[in-house]
Each structure stands twice: as structure tokens, then as C-alpha cells.
Image (cartoon, rainbow, N blue to C red; front, side, top):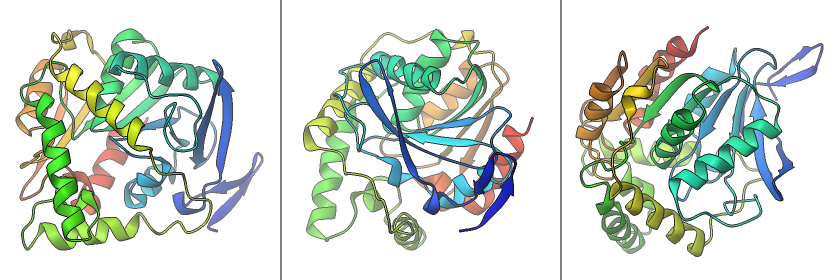
Length: 288
């Protein structure tokens, strides 16, 4: 383990080595992992559809954790957390707030991807004083055009992956071309770098509930994103089939002063395909 001793004990510098912990709040036992030096403003990661603690790319987390306290967590009903997945994105944001408060954080930075970005938007709108900086990747606004079609896209790609004995993320996150296919294989391989203390996979029922919540979010009235005053970084690939890339541009237009990065020849997982470029960009953005 690549650790450095500090007054608070050894610092975990690798996500693959971060121990899984639990904290109970509101009757729910939340599973979470943390790494990086304690102190300062923590960076809390909000994960994607069907994902658990094991679905974060270490090539993005580890560079951020070099100088920042990073926290990842399972929402209720997901992975090793107890309880049930709520039926709406708003309730997921409330659960995230409960978890963050339980850890005693008064100010955080947020890194979010896909479904996590939807939850993060609701969190920052409801608790604007909590979030200092906001990173929204592979996501879109409430009521965004074609977000509600994610259910059909997801099931189609799960079928395609099953027929080819592949991970569904290879189809959902990456282009099926000479650039995307090897990037997909490399990404899935990185997610296997952690060999011990792996999380429980999401249950089919929890997955279905999340999908329905996303569809409801896509069919809801738009949120007032002009109320988001936090420095915001938005990133995506130029060919996102799950949450259309045009919605990243819409977020950029509606969130004043936000920054937008669109990676070429890439899909929903553009930030993972271009991790070597994106990681230093996001580290710079999140710097105090």
C-alpha cells in the first residue's frame, strides 16, 4: 500500500486499497470508502446508474486523492448499504445529504457522473451552502430531452453485452469503433484492480428502481439551474448515447460561469477514455 504517515495515521493513496467503512444515519447503514489526506474540504463522489463502490475509475480518483480527502459511498439499497433505493432523484439527494451530515462535513466539493450528476444537481439546489465546487460529468438537467429514453438504451446494451459475454459498460459508455473498444476493455480492467473487500453488486430490483427514477427525472419540469452559483465543471464525450451530449452543452448554458469539456470520438464514458487528460484538468479545477 502506498501510504504516507501523518499525525492522523497512514494516508491511503490508492482507491484499490481504501478500506470499506460504514456509518449509520436515519436508520440506514451507509457503506463508504475514503482515501487521501484528511483535512480541508473533502471531495464526495456521486456514482452512476447500477454502480457500487467498485465502479470508480482509479485513474481519476487516485490523482484527486493525492492532495484531497476523497469519499465514495453507496446510496441506500445499493451495494453494501442497507435500506431501499428511493423512487425519485430528489429522495436520493436527501439521502446523500443525510450521509454527508453524518460524516460531519459542512462544506464539500462534489464529483458526479451520470445518475450521480442528477442527484448532485438536486443536492446543490436544496443545500447551496454545502457545496463549494461542482463537477458534472456524463449527465443532464431535469426534464432534459431524451433522458427518459435511457431505459430502452440500457436494456438494449445489456442484451448486446450478454450476447457477446461483455460488460454492459463497454456498450453503454464507449463507442463501438477502433478507438472505443480498446478504451472500454482497459476501463473494465481498471475496475478489477481491487481484488479484496469488493462491494456487493446492485440487485435487479434496485437497478430497476433507479432506472424508473431517471425516467421520471427526464419527464419532470426543469429545475432553476440559474440558482447554481458554484464554480462548475461539465464534461462528456461527443457521442453520449445514454444522456445525450447536447444536454452537457445545455447545462453549460444554464449554469452561469461553468466550464465545458467535450472529448472527441467518445461516448458516455468520455472522461474514462480520456482519463490521462481529464484527471489533471479536474484536479486543477478542484484546487483550492
